[in-house]
Image 1 (cartoon, helix red, strand yellow):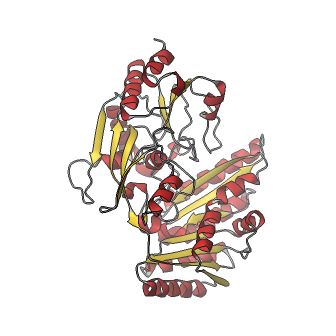
Image 2 (cartoon, rainbow, N blue to C red; image 1 turned 180 degrees about the vertical axis):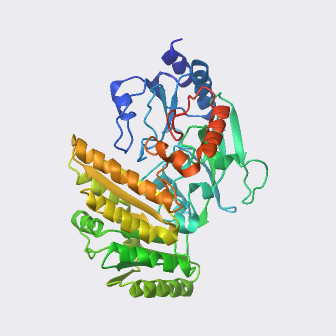
Image 3 (cartoon, helix red, strand yellow; image 1 turned 90 degrees about the vertical axis):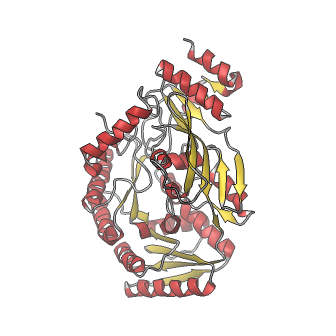
Length: 457
């Protein structure tokens, strides 16, 4: 069978490419993993087209890798078995915004910032905020989280239903428009976070929130990262319910000042934010949080009250990863994350810094501290095999420590290629085999994003 000719009959010649340029563009994501060229790239425009492509791929045992914005950090969209990359760029409609029920129906290619801009004009927002301008489909595939997950949950907590094309081309709808759902197996939850290995999301019904009336944001500096981390458990223990509680090492503040002409104190820093319908509630909870920070040795406290200043602060915070990469001068890097119970966060931070520094890496940690999610960038020169080995060693040590503390190998980056080897250690062999049974049932020919999530049998 001439696969390219059959696909052109489905999508037309202008939405299929076998050029080197398009195949190279779809060979890599934002991780350090080696790129792999797909055989061809297609751009569907409808669920019906996605279903026809899947049916054809299933009949010919041709791998399909779903593609959004390629902002993933763990090799999630690298087409390791080549085949078809299905780029959802042209399925980017905001189908409906149901203001009365705080819901939106969108296609998978909608970019997060485009959705945010559209909703903000109606006084609404979609809570997950991973920083990168990911597509909604990518966020669903990876169960993206980010700075607001502490109050509003990750993507999984904000998706009510899905339209999904299975490997054989059949179309299923999951969930409902009801906030409460207790009917049958929760298929929505199975597909969210499955990284495109179980089905191809073609539409999503999202839960929205009204934009809060009152916001308080503070920048708190500490003498050490460990002191800042120690304050986290006490803030969370008082049930103050911050909307965001972010930890940044001093290096990150220095890079912000260098790149953005800001004037932050270049010390370990916590960003704290509260939101509410009541100004009094916001102020009282912020005062309590800052008091806890002072008890843990806080040396600088600054308030952000202007809306534009606050928006710029979070924009600058979201740019941390790219500033780090720019300083690698063409080097490679591992951008990894783990998550632990919040009471163990300070111990994890201390361990991460010590492990990184002992192996020749600066301990430039950052994280969504309120939910115990720690990030660590490990950069090394190109071609330096020793440094590469040490970076992987530190990454592995941190994962092992997180699992030992009752946590997970990934709080929000997902598994992709990078964390497959830790699945059995975290979940146990029986649970991994149960996951494999689900994969086999839904994708018996293993065509959907193969070699991701699950370890080798």
